[in-house]
Each structure stands twice: as C-alpha cells, then as structure tokens.
Length: 272
Ligand SMILES: [Zn+2]
Image (cartoon, rainbow, N blue to C red; front, side):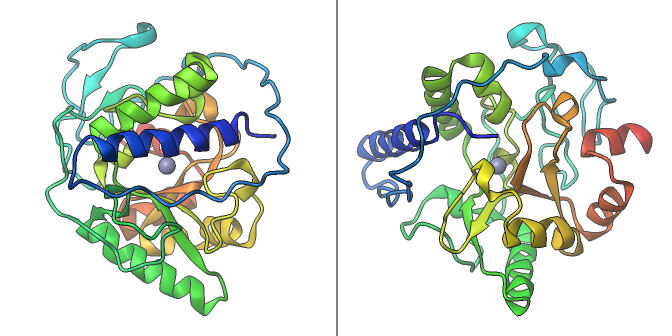
C-alpha cells in the first residue's frame, strides 16, 4: 500500500518543528531535513476502511483506572490510565495518559539516530533506553544497522503533530496512523520508531519487508520490545501496520506477547 501524503507530511513536520523551535529559544534546534525521494509519486487516495471501533473492545489493561469518562472524541469512552509510570501500561485510543504526564526518568540512549540535533524525540525511559542500546548492538552483530527515528514525544508535541496530520489528510485518515495527544505510546517514553541507518523509509510503509524490519520482527522481543501495530490488526489496535514502531514491555512480558502471536490488547484480554 502506498502511504498517502508522505512528502506533504514530512514537509509539514519540518515546518512544524521549525515553528516550535522558533517559539522557544533556546529550545530544540531544527531537526535535519528528512530524506525525501523527489521521484516519489503523488499520494494516492486511500479507500476508507471500516471504523476500527467496530472491533472487540479489550478489557482494561494493567494500570487502567476505573471507568472515568473523559472527553470522548468520535463518541469513544476515554479513560485515563491509573499509573502512567507502569512499564506495562496500556495506552491506546481508549486509554489515555494525563496531559501533564512526563516520564520521570527520560534519558538519551546512546544509539544512532537519523537526525543529528538534540530533540526530545531522542529520549526514552532509562530501562527502555538501555534495552534499545542492547538491541541496536545485537543487530549490528547480525549486520543490521538500525537508527532511531522518534522516541519520546510530549503531549504538546503530539498535539501539534496530530493537528498537522489532520490538516493534511483529514481526521479519518490521520487517526489511522497518528494518535491524538494523550493517546500516543510515544508519550510513555517506552516507544521508539526505528529505521535503517540511512533513514530511508523511516516511518513509512516501504519499511515493511526490509532486512531491518524483518530483524526487528524476529528479535525485538529478545530485548523487551514488541512490534506494537502488527499487520492486519488495525481493527484491534486502531492503527495501520507499523513495522517500525516498537514498544518496550520488559523481556518477560515482551516474549510472552510475542509467543502468543496476539496484539497487546488481545494478550491483556486473554491473560486477565
Ligand atoms: Zn511510533
């Protein structure tokens, strides 16, 4: 499937980052230009798919609070997670993080990124960062050179990001690949988008099937990560296939989820 509006999104992202940086000196510097294939075709229209909400509603995951309906965009009942700091916290379209939640132990993993400047996207929680370093090192031993694309994102950054996607692609499509603020795993500091070291196909459909994507699918769990949005599970996870997005759960839980063959939502429903 050709990913829609990739170039437009990247351009908007760069402009957005520039605007954010410009407004808060001495804040983060401009991110480097993201490699864009100038020969890429114009975005193709995407056929609308059935609402993801038509799928089964998973039970509350670990850390889920008692039902506490908040603003429910699109008619969904949204609950705040009870413990945002839990390593196994479930964050999705149903369960949200508080807007003011910032993970307590964000650090910068010592790994390659596809950009050179400092940015909050370099950060992860300490335990996840250490595991990421191990995973990247192990990949290199297998001749696979990974790079970080996007780790921690603040509520405010996600808010701006999501708004830019909505303005480009419209709400319905944007919701299939981007989270509303408070609903992004990136705000947990436990997620990282990963590409190959060239940055080619970073956070793009064309990452699927690459040696890097295959390696992650086969080995991420050995280091405590799962590929969080598997193929064909959009009706459960709420998101399109994202072979680049890994979520840290710790080794024991990640291995169990991997071996179950289930999404994290399904795994929690089956094991509670
Ligand atoms: Zn991601």
